[in-house]
Image (cartoon, rainbow, N blue to C red; front, side, top):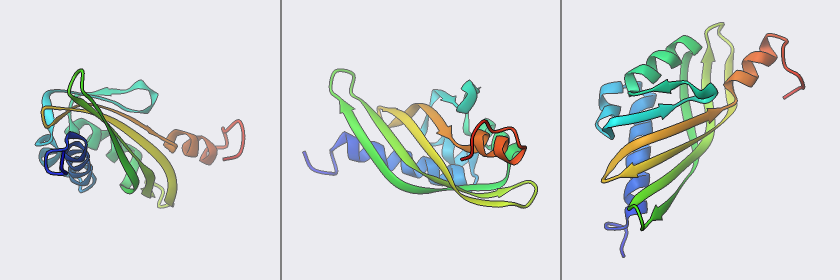
Amino acid sequence: MDQKTDPATAAKAIVEAYLERSMVPDPQGARAYVSDDFDITFTGGRKFTGPDQTAAFNAKRYKWVKKKFLRTDAAYDPSTEDVHVYNTGYLFGEWHDGTRFETNRYMDSFVVRNGQIVSTHVWNDSAEILLEKAGLAEAPL
């Protein structure tokens, strides 16, 4: 199987293109990569159904935010033909108070089916960083 027909390679490209559009932010452009029944779970168990909702959530939390990709890995499941994609790295940007950040770890997992993202789960350190900023962290970061 070459790279042009490898489902894992194709799924990684779909996920990275989706993330690039999401970072602009361009929710309509990002929507081109997701299924009609797309399901997103953000940190804290927050549920969304589209890139427009996550862009609105991020606008409340950050003045601006982007992702620095460290790696994207994929695993093809031949029994379902789904590809499980994992993208990890660092968020960088600015909080609404003007404080910049660059080492906010994140890990996103995706399920890609028939060339479209059907679900994603998003984890990052933002809540822990905000707790620390507020003096509420149980231990130093």
